[in-house]
Length: 265
Image (cartoon, rainbow, N blue to C red; front, side):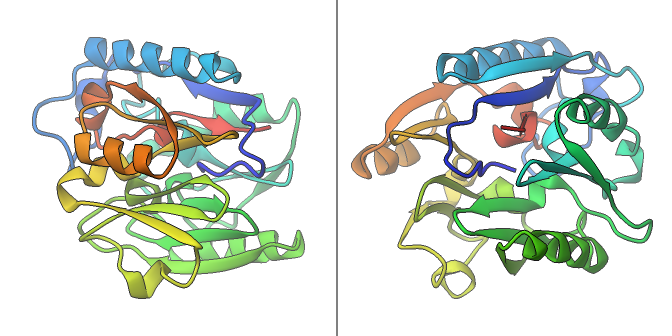
């Protein structure tokens, strides 16, 4: 979940890339077999970028039995200090959440989902006073309803968004790098879906869809994927200070910047 209340992002948990990353799920962005060594290089650069922005990063060990295990965002959603532990939408990924839950339990209460509910954290964007929840192939109606109930109890609003078959998760094509602002990819989300939500929507061209996934920090600082010149210029024109990370090796398994972390403070 890329939003983090004041976007100070003081703490995050990540996990090293599985040695079997070449077997990771890949449908949307991959152009070649995922490479575990190259992906770990991108992951290392990612962690360095988070730390350079002041985030204290905890690194969990990789899981041989779970090729997608580095995508910890899907394992948990933070709700005002409580960690909702996901029932992951892809059957092959179930079990990845165990170590993430154990780590988060050291500083947060845990909330478990009912068995019929599935939800990936990648379908959740925290946007100022509300949670945007994507209904996708990974997050079902029961999962969205359960999360909705929990966040409304904490005083937050909810907006449900149907995710088109052209993309995996809501965060794949949408992020919120600062208060009042959404970054969204043309050709996946529409003005009718999200136009009423934000004071400012920065639409990136369809060819740059991958770069709509950003990590915003306080002070209009933002991390974006390297290699997307149009998105970089859009962000610069909007007043952001930019750090880029080469995410191509992570992209081969449909992973994006936010997929690699859970910001727990």
